[in-house]
Length: 319
Image (tube, rainbow, N blue to C red; front, side, top):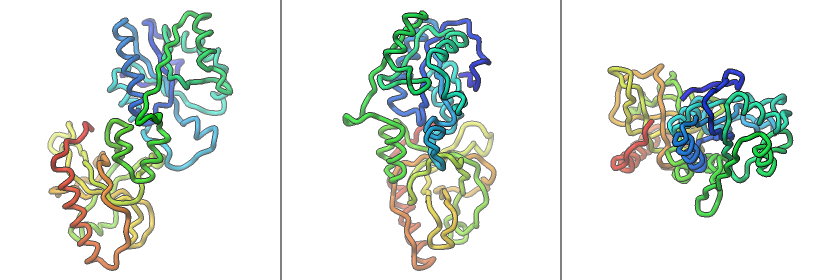
């Protein structure tokens, strides 16, 4: 997979099939469309291309701030590549881009991507004021010589699978429901940074994960999941460890600052500076304030055993 951030960087000679969307989360609905496109494109000896955006149009159009994304742009590109996409084009969505007319944009796709077919979901629209709806794009295809393929959206219990629904589930702590829509456990990644070492002092050392400031973190509470680290011997294939992770504000202590602190089971090594991926498999309990350190230690011990019992028969997703 080749990831580029400017259409002008491409002047492809091989015909392509193109899909356009934000694809935040690369959830089961996205996966359905992408797999269909990749299968058809490669069978026809064409390139499979996904064109996406950063920032998210909602961030620009509605002024949303804070933790909004399910993936970083690079994570999203890697997930699309895993599905067989040949090129991911991540375009900057800004006030200038939002003014582009739909007809002008199709001209750019034809010029730079040698587009033979455009694949979209049944609710798709693009361009200035979303003028490029299905009927418009079908007319454009007839005039300019590309095929429009419209894929029906897949549903989960008769409700559309959407990135916004997944965000809401995560913010409620419903990580198992979110997994059903994503098709994999939700994960965060980041560098292990120094904290206040309180966990180590009470016998439960934790790894503090510095998560991208714009990525959604599930609701405060305690979760069982898998912590993935580069192999400490050769630094190549990741090694996975059962872990219990606290998301929250350290209520029993200062209560200051959001933290994601993973306690890796049966593990003791210096991993500061390493990149960790934590996948949220199960919500164990809500965040609590304890009356003292002894009560906190007892509860962490119970959390650890419950988490271990849940994970022991589970197989982790590929990191």
